[in-house]
Length: 321
Image (tube, rainbow, N blue to C red; front, top):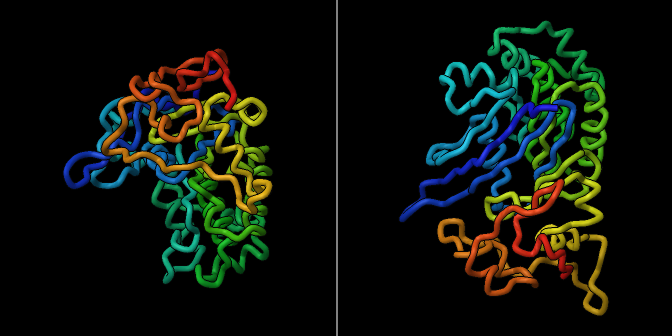
């Protein structure tokens, strides 16, 4: 099946004092209709920049230096601003990270959702909006339409945000850290909601998260990002049972349910993501990698692997840490 949304060799940088920060470098990935793609990595690895680029919402100071973002084969980078606005929300919709700031505090929920659909030339009746709120698990949806955002919990606001995104029947739904701002109970409920919705959602879903549990619960494939690059892409089962990039292995080892024997400490990855304005000559992960050698520190790796992509000099040898 051909890709519904694809990113091809995408590079994005931000203007900063004294130079540019290279947030994305030659990122290539795709998602097909009916598929859920997860994008995972530490903070500062480029996940949210990639999500913003996919929907055409990069902030001021960002520059797309190269590559393409295609929706059903059409490069969205070369569309007029009016055409991009028409696609955004209707063909590609997004659920943002913080439901506490996603709504205007002085307008009712019903007014805001109706305004959103009306902006795309399809002002839906309140009954249809209420039906979608019920679908995402909002109790007494008709009453909810008359409430203000502060009258709803964070979990309820996130459900409303998901309902608003789905009302236009988008081809692609992008969820950027949809559970991060919620407590554990609400997080579990949103995960179960998204899993239930995928059964009757005909498009593709992209989940951006740092939470490997969300990836395991929801996704078919996963792209692991580090320092602005996709370092490994694989089916979810393959990644969890046979991670091939040292960074993927390190992420999976950081299980909060595991305590290092004799220390009482949780496992962590030593060091930090490198400064993306002053990148190392070789592999970006080399300074933190237990397998790194002189080649890793001096020469950028190339994508290797059969049936899955791994950006690592050691991918072919499969040496475990």
